[in-house]
Length: 112
Image (tube, rainbow, N blue to C red):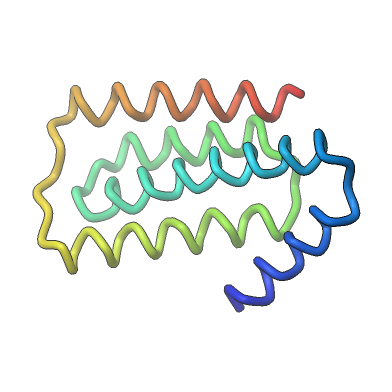
């Protein structure tokens, strides 16, 4: 599934002009960051922050299956990596700061 999704995105990137491909790459990176933070929130049981992440995505992302699947995949990867590395949960203030930055980035790249 991962290979199919990435292959599809790469195929689309080849067909697009450079600026569009760069925009799509920035968008995928921004979604991946939110997925990473969501995986940490799941592991650390930061329920309010999980709701906030979903609200940010609902507010800014177009309703496209591939984007939702990308978010879910990066969330899953983040959750599993967090467990495997036996990491400790970040402090809530630090986590909130990172979430604020990621939320602003989502708003920025999806406003273009």
